[in-house]
Image 1 (cartoon, rainbow, N blue to C red):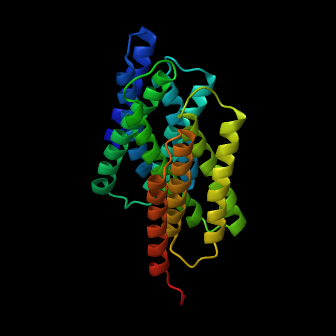
Image 2: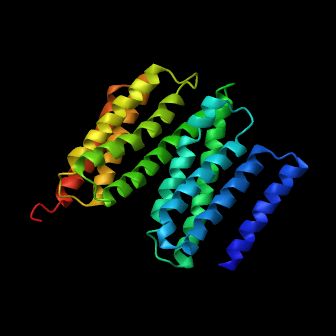
Image 3: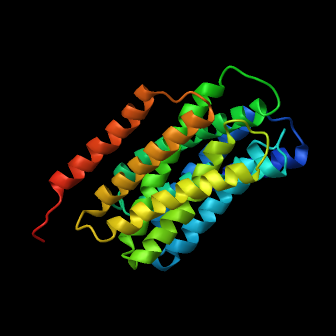
Length: 279
């Protein structure tokens, strides 16, 4: 435990020294530093008293937001500083929320923290591609789009699971899922052209988020396990967002529609077959 504090303190001191000396750091180096700092922040959750859990999770998410802006600062404007930080912040929030549920053992949590750091590194690289692609065309845009789309679904699943684990009133389930889905959908739709945040993007995001929120509201009455409920809603997000992005890119065809609907139908059938209708 003291080792983590010493390493974290060392990293922070190096970061401050680099800032004071104004040494030139490339974006990749900054992204590496941010990923390491947040990984140690995630590891330090074992040292946080239970009554500080929610504050620590919120603080770690805010730290991810601030450090991600620092890492991608070059080329950012006010709009991109908000939109591009949605997924890194939400992903950190989702993983940190799940991290507290893991067994309090280094053997379990240490590999998860390493995996988080590697995924976060990949995520920031993808966001940097969007940051640069909004100025000029680069060949890595398609790879970055796929990475962000997949991580959006993973983040949504984890956050949806947290919502259902709170056992809220059914209306609040729908509201919470809508509020989670809206920014996640918005940043994906914005990344299609990256020209601005207009009413068209806002309306599309709101409509899709409303559909996902209504799914959560409906599943509140279904006697189904919470992880399965989260999986169904995440699959609904995959279907609606996938069809929407293909439509907006003028690439939607019959094969794509059946592919998306096939995945949705498959997950729905699994949910029906695994539900205990007898209580």
